[in-house]
Figure 1 (cartoon, helix red, strand yellow):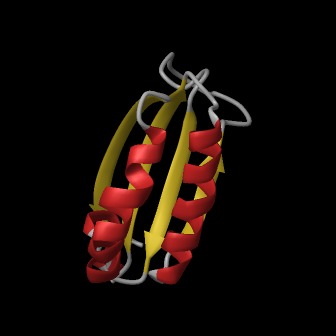
Figure 2 (figure 1 turned 180 degrees about the horizontal axis):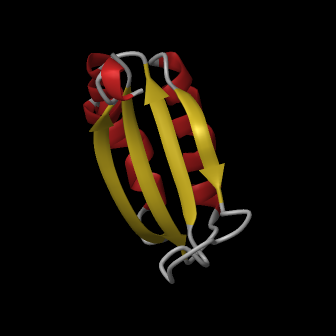
Length: 103
């Protein structure tokens, strides 16, 4: 069953390290079987005040195991994640796909 990482990002500094993070994290996502479902700022905010100025990233992985291997693996934790330190505020959660009867 698919699993997702959802990130709401408020970027304050587009540093060379953040650009490297973007490239390396994308390579690592794909290496773990993941793909980007959403990546960027909203085209239009329909309601609320929390989305302007923020980007949304939704990653989809075929299984929770592949997602966990990506996000909790040494390569991401030690070599990739530190590249975004000090570049913004990141609210990140892991979600399971809804059961088939709800799809």
